[in-house]
Length: 237
Length: 292
Image (cartoon, rainbow over all chains, first blue to last red; front, side, top):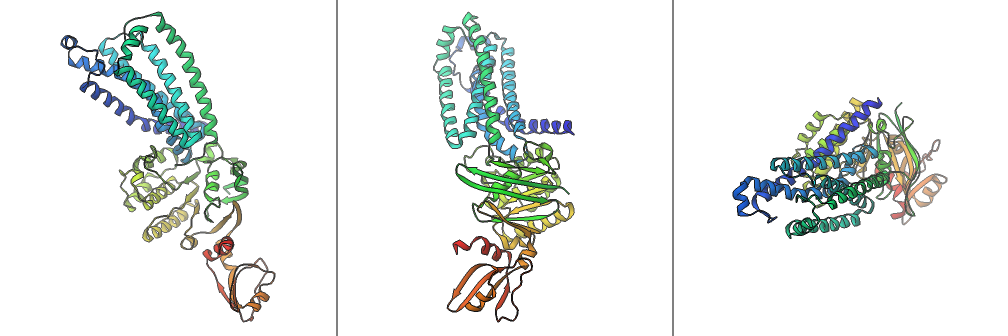
């Protein structure tokens, strides 16, 4: 009986949360590909590079670079957008609170794994360097933790929490846009030797080593906080 | 017998006490009407019974087991909430009817997809429409579909007929009785349209100021309540010592609603007019006295 309840719980969380985020992940990937196809926003490609590598490879390169930025945003934005309603809905349908919290973690996992696989696939096709990859993954983990903190703020402070979330995401998005579009990535990336530039500096290793424990601790704290808040959450749908 | 019991339930929001020491037992195989004025605590009570809200004190037990964080118990309970999606209200408001029902189907182990489909067709609801685009009546239809198709042993409906036209209300009551007869499920229906639903309620639970005022067989409650009218002095004499409500005096004539307790009777041949009342009259007498 206990086992069947556990299976029921896992199955319905997989069904619900994967359906909830699959659409939006696909939308992000489509936006990424369309954007990459239509605009060369990084400014890194030249007519020479297009001639040498071909338009498709330039597009894929752009797509990968955009998705590195967008991908860092997605673990932050998706739980903050879907988490609160999903938690309310699943509890209202008779889901356990603890089960719902793990459902949200499954959503994080889905987002991180799919975005990482997508970026990795593009990088594989482009035969790009992998030196930035561990740092990127650590960034996603940190982003997921921040997204979960925003979700906690929404559940705990309702409208004020939503306003705070919108502000935080806006600041994050503007920073990311500046980073990619306004050339910060070039100067910062070039100077620090991070991201997709093939400059394996010691700083990169240091940042990666520092960000993993920070991300992991933030994530763990956010889960504990979410458990505490969901325990007292009153359903409103 | 399968039961859902809430013992000593209280709910506080700051200093405001919404529910005060509520004790209630719901038995399997009954249709209960939950009635009370706005803000009486009906929705809060249903939310706590279904573990959608935590109680400040007390606990809810399903067959002796706590309902809180108990999947076995929660599988037997469905509280289909009144939906009020707001524009820009997040992903639930933006959900399509079919997605909402699909999400519900994942969570209720006894979900009857055939019944959900049948009701969807009967209500002529477009499954592709977003919840936020639905009228109040259509939202009520969605909550009815979830409640009926969940097949949960204890099913709670909050204002299920709000916004429904008279034909659909009639259909809902018929379908409810049909389902009840076939499955012996328990339904608790919270409504303000009392008179219409009164015939369906086997028992009525009246909530007043966060307390259970009474829980009684509907026919018995209505059967022991009367409107007595006549000359003021005669009426006063006849109802002395009885539980009276809503006194109304015009000139020398007086009318009063009397709730007889066990063993009490009204004096015969007193020249008074004694009229039966309906459930709505009983409710107004018990809960609306201060306002009228």
